[in-house]
Image (tube, rainbow, N blue to C red; front, side, top):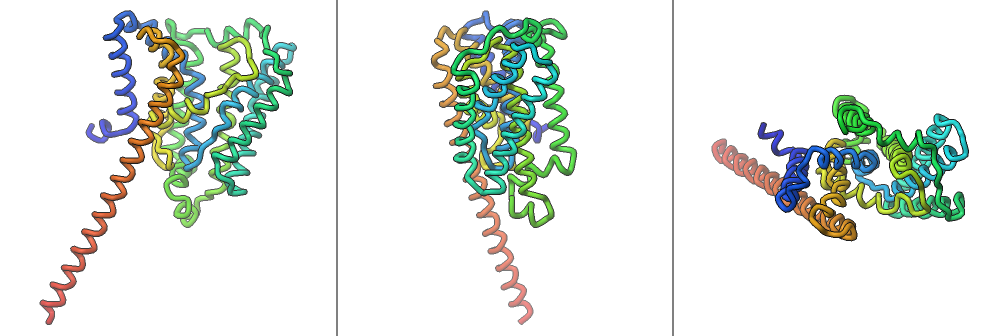
Length: 338
């Protein structure tokens, strides 16, 4: 129980509960089952893109192109559906686009050795430009009604089918990462890339795989995004990269890599997705959304940095104390021998 209470995921969940309770105290109308469920239903896109971002952060890197990947995939898939193309073909094309973008980022970061922030920022610019070229800057509208209903379909009560499938997928991914050998590679590479390579873990391939997974999940989130909104603009997906990073950090994933879980990222995504709704019940404008996101990101990153610094200092003192103790014992042993 002590170990469970100290876990980062539980801390994130307790923060989410406290956030809901505080807003409920300010405005009791918020604490209804419909509002709570709506917060979770609205978080599906954020959860998917944040889980993808988690893979990049697990290996000690970052991917700031996920928002553009989301937007470009949504644009291509929506255009195909609007023009009467087969749904499965459109979805497959979208996922292939995400995989190729992830593979490109993995090549640049893991193989070419370019800093991930710089390379993925360049990819972000390229994909944003491609969105304008592909659509001519026009909105993509008139999507099939059946496609838009995919997001609103419910399973039990008002719990959406998308949320249910997303939760099951997150649990499956979590188990694969924790219970399988190859799944643990991502955390190992992020914790100590050189050490992971020394024990036979393919660090480069693992980094490329992390970016491919990140790209595929960003593409899937783009498909869900277009189903939810019902149209796509040339700026769709903008800002999702910051929210995904903030969700991961809020969920207890360390930006230095090697620490955290996709469940934590999912809880953080629910927090980020709920901010706009919470602001409405607090009688504040949605214009504060990005400001609050930035404040949360800065606060948690600073706290994480301080925790890492304190942990490193504590470990250093323990090693120093152990060496001093062993040295004293050696002197005592030598004196007795004499």
